Image (cartoon, rainbow, N blue to C red; front, side, top):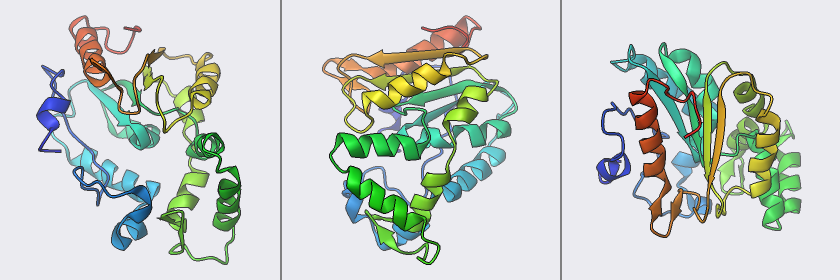
Length: 235
């Protein structure tokens, strides 16, 4: 992220930032999701990504500082598994992630796009133990889809003891509004602090004409840290 990290994280004026990026991804690449290189596809899976991220967190210096784990889009699926590795965890932030299990969110998006039957065929294929993990389907390996189908996110987020923020764009084309609404309804009974914010006109990257939602999130975090109420109150 070297080419744009300074701009992307400009709002974090007093933070040390550790970026746990998905292995094998070039942030500058414009490759369509269905045309990823073979080597990347064969190694891409949620469990593998989480193992890399855990190793990076455990090796990081400065972990005695209050730390916020921020999951961006698919990265939010790793947060419950990474949380125990952070000794001074102040809370979790989901950006452009529904909070639902990826299987459920994926089904809603497939229906939204008119690909419900394709999703059903994928469900059948990933469940077939006779088919190898290395088999390609919808631009990914079955290892990737099998991880996704079995991945639990919603309940660990709801049951977790950490403060939780969720910020998403109302014009998000990659995650349907129904997915955000479902998680919001389930999370209302959460015992730890919980805050959900939707940004009018913002896309999946939290960008809207004349408004950078990511910088808004950083400003909210800065304000909470200065007031020693980090993630305890809704901004």
